[in-house]
Length: 174
Ligand SMILES: Cc1cc2nc3c(=O)[nH]c(=O)nc-3n(C[C@H](O)[C@H](O)[C@H](O)COP(=O)(O)OP(=O)(O)OC[C@H]3O[C@@H](n4cnc5c(N)ncnc54)[C@H](O)[C@@H]3O)c2cc1C
Image 1 (cartoon, rainbow, N blue to C red):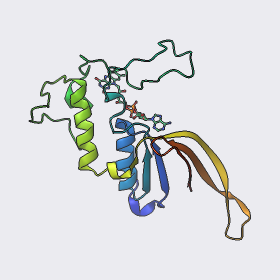
Image 2 (image 1 turned 30 degrees about the horizontal axis):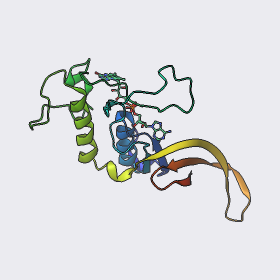
Image 3 (image 1 turned 90 degrees about the horizontal axis):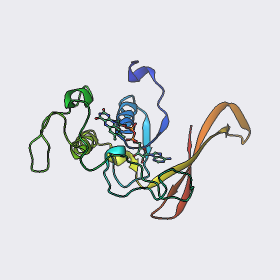
């Protein structure tokens, strides 16, 4: 990976605060970019956030159905040993505590706890806009200072919805 001194700092958006989004956000910030993460749920963890709710239309035909993002079920344990699942510089180590699962193939709750630990350790939560769903991503030409369009520079437009505030926002990432 190139050193941060050779990289031009950008405004960068990451969609989703699951395992992939969390580590992407950390790496992008490490490289000197200004990062914002859009996450439609209220917390980090993505598919590891367990809920006993099920979708109202199991065949996913009805577009108005209630969508449940996770397919994790109550008794699920990992199908990989914890030492294969952690990020290289933040191992999925056994932690003590009442709610922690110290097994080598732990429960889904332990994976969620690990991802929360990761997020806390690297201060990722402060980058996240929770309850914010990205509904559209598109390119748009950037205007130059004299107001003319400049096809050399493209910007990406993120349109999202914040459910709590019922606010539609648009964000330009150059
Ligand atoms: C049942 C099951 C068991 C698994 N077991 C293992 C295992 O044992 N070991 C293993 O290594 N892997 C396992 N996996 C794989 C698992 O998918 C990965 O470990 C990892 O959690 C995937 O992370 P992710 O960030 O790619 O996706 P996700 O965890 O799905 O995260 C995506 C995030 O993006 C958010 N999002 C999506 N669209 C939008 C939008 N438009 N706007 C805003 N936010 C959005 C979602 O809310 C979510 O938080 C399992 C998966 C499942 C389903």
